[in-house]
Image (cartoon, rainbow, N blue to C red; front, side, top):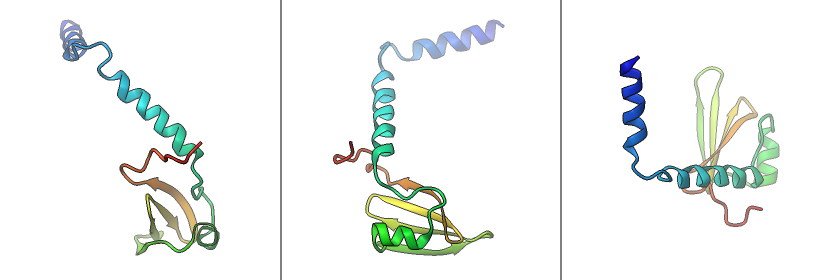
Length: 102
């Protein structure tokens, strides 16, 4: 029990400023909100629909694994497919905040 209290005390005092992590948390929440407002492919969308709506990708990667997972890269984000359906879309580092979102 004493070790647990000591660990918590050290962790609590490691940041001498009570707002040291607050800015990062607020920024992350705002980035998530902005990303949600961006128009991106959604889970279950077909490859043909992605290409017709967003255009041809800047780069495509060959399928990997079983089931085959394919990645298409666009400017600022990548989309991952299982067979012909979107699994998820990932924003590239530094592209999370879209100045035109919202």
